[in-house]
Length: 242
Image (cartoon, rainbow, N blue to C red):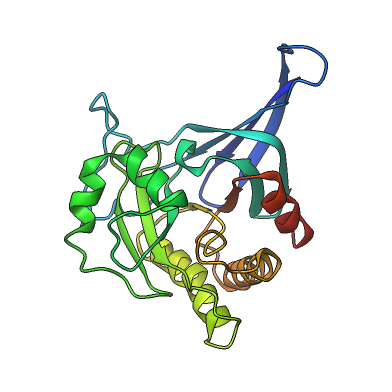
């Protein structure tokens, strides 16, 4: 059975409902969930970035309605959700890109985001002068369903003796702070540094969840944080810390 999860986000609350729809396929066919988020326009539309339009040229300044197809489950607790799916399919205020220091694209989620956004994203990134590990910068989303992209650079794992944990925590902390500064209410993260940068998944998940909880505990400007994890292994590890 397919399940559709729809979440409507106002300034302070998000309500959800599940609707069952017709089963496709037989036997052990995989189940899919669609995650839908709608959030009202916030206080600012990033004057330095400018308004975003979709491919048909229609402004998405006032409302967002997006869908990400996920493989199995959606797990929620308070303002934090975890899903197993493709972050480039999520229509939301902002998705976070696990970038490299050049901000010019690469492999993994970084490459996927650049491909989905189109060459305009690369052109804007060229104007930013790169980004240091733990810092964050923001651009438009261009052809992505997301309005904006926050680019942050995670640490390369060197055995944990080179302040990797603090740098990774700063990625989440600075990305959330940048979202708040720009009036953004809903944020989606990938598993930063867990790909080619080699950060141990268990340790990375704990840092991601703890840092996010600490931030949300002292800041009520963010309505929802979604961890969009590519693969069942990542989903199951993140679920342990929810």
